[in-house]
Image 1 (cartoon, rainbow, N blue to C red):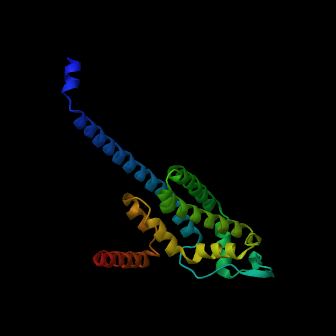
Image 2: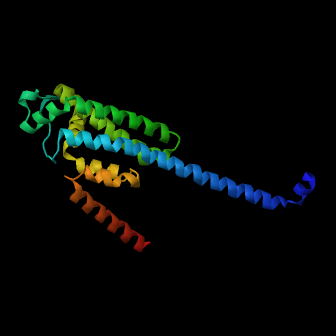
Length: 214
């Protein structure tokens, strides 16, 4: 009876059914994978913002003071020679709370690296931006620990960017976190909320204009 049933099945229909089933599985696994990636972005975003808020609660234009040593080399001045804002920032950065938050960032970045290593698109959209923020934060924290660690223009750029470009960094994370985290994330961004909403609106209007032209 089984042989008769198999004989009655149209091979074309069977192949089509297998193909449809395969596509459905692909969508299922792809959707789950994207949720896992955005979950890793969630795990990174919260400690990053909490660390930033703890160290520098309000937006600032302050940057680290350095000494030019020639040949493209610089050196951060001792903490007692830093501007008042930077001295306060450095003291808070060396407390236990930032250390714990940075450890969570490292764990989340490792999770993201594991999830995105097989896809170039995922690495470019999620993995690389997270790694850049992690590297910048590491440079900033090591500079706070010992200003002499800021020994190149690039390290100074990263140190200053952590303080001065928080709006940009938080927008990077806002675009990558899961929708379910948006409310909690925005509550942690009250000092930047108006500017973030303004940027979102401007970007939305640009996309709409581009869609109309195409």
